[in-house]
Length: 300
Ligand SMILES: *Cc1c(COP(=O)(O)O)cnc(C)c1O
Image 1 (cartoon, rainbow, N blue to C red):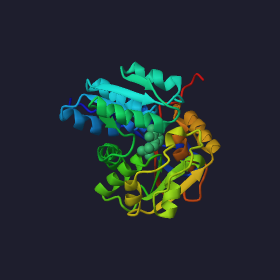
Image 2: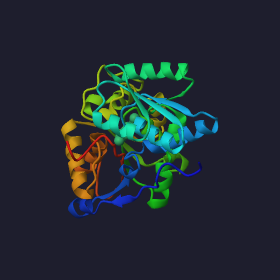
Image 3: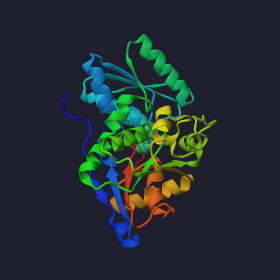
């Protein structure tokens, strides 16, 4: 029970980027978690807390990495997990989730439908609803990324992180505060069709996107958590938005560098160092959160 569900991940210095461009880039390899993404850190904190309270039934509405990590946590903690996913969820992810003994229910055309159904079910079945990004326990779990970096490297000048609903960003900023790394400059990355953080940060209030239009579906939250905006005010933040093609190209370059597949959601962050944005300079120590993603495979 006290055994952690996530791994301490390696921090790799990019020899390629050092040799080719003189950059000092460190990748925090969250793609090497047992569920291929950092999401398991949040689920570890979330599920452990609720299991200690005596709960053994969880319902998630994510057909992506949150649902997959939830299924993994449930298997490890002997809890029952249902994952409600919309029709659009790939067969590949449904099978991955089922392989971990979770029950996959298909409901509705879009995530919002699945989400409403999961909320309803959690009430009638007296189960805990598992949010994908908007929860204090999830953020605490994600903040362990920075706990590890604190032991692995000097304070970074810049930190690059992808934003979907902003749960990862909240965890990262909480971790930086905890360790007194407040002066680290934050570069957030999103693809154009999912720029909910960019829009909200610019407007200084939560903006809801009308639609999500990107291959990086993992970043596709129409609204970020208000906490991301609140914490962002305490940091020096630059918000970047790029075309899908750039994020995809970065996943290819990363695969060439480390023989490891990640989603375009992660490629968005990687692209900032591969494609020389003006914010990146050779004098900086740069930390890139290689957030990973399981919805990517060699065979299609
Ligand atoms: C969930 C996820 C994100 C985005 O995280 P948020 O907490 O929604 O901002 C980015 N990359 C990957 C691989 C993810 O699984």
